[in-house]
Length: 457
Image (cartoon, rainbow, N blue to C red; front, side, top):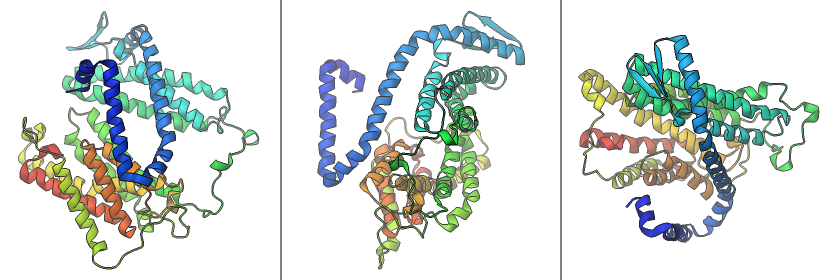
């Protein structure tokens, strides 16, 4: 049964009781497994969970009120969109709330008003100004909020104009199923980055040095850290390849009904970032001069186990990934549709690139982002001060949860995240986690090609 069906069967009170019992059972199971490690984990996550719940309540409250203004905003959206298309291309007809260009028609109703993006950018900028409140002059800095609203409205107009032009002049299926679903997030991300980059550069908004408020003691930088802290360079080196991978995926999904044909662009963008950051990787991702302020990685062990561990862990991840990904009965997994329309040589080339990306690129960029950056960032803001493989339950579980949510099979993803963290911990080497990850992905690729398990990709 789905959640709506359960709710209809039990009623509101029964559904709340059922959900509470379920969450309570999970909490008791977690306590039994984690024992003493649960209390510090809860204390560490409580502020973030509280902030997330407060933000969710705020979003719900604002969205419930914003719905009242959808209709009134859709009319100016329709007028400005039709005017912009007529100005740049011509040949536009407006009938009621429908814009027609050639044979492509788009209805500009309340949901196209862009009010969701306005709410999101307002919340984002509010949080940004609060976090950096000591860097800006208030109330002057509050002008960023109406500026964000205006820019968000303009970005929505650009999105609609491009949608109509793509549908009329290029491909209506691409416009309706590719660009339409991804363009909103692309424009929101671009607007957020532009606002964050621009606001600190406006002198009228910045705090003067003489007026700058003293930094609270708990935010003061450590005085025992090296003068040339490596953390900023390490942060960029760990996150840039993964960020470019995500950005390329978002863009290719917007220009294709299925982003899979452009997999090479994603892998290529990440590979370029790895090449650009190669000097940082050669120098190491930890500062050997600094004493670690957190629990250090386990000392290197002798014997056969440390060298064999990445291979055993990678094989283990593959085994439980397959167990937790049962073969669906109907419909059976099939290769991507576009492969059947391509020449055999081009389809074979795509498969080769897909395997190379899965085995050689994805393990590197994901381990850099999750075990190289996030797991250490949960221990200290100066990640270069934290050795690779350093372990606390909070950092390991938090990173594994984030890693799992990135994958469709999130339970297997969480377990895999913990396993890769363990691989890095044994000898304090990120390359061991990368090796385990690459082996698991290679075996999954073999299953896709040899057993026809296309659902695993």
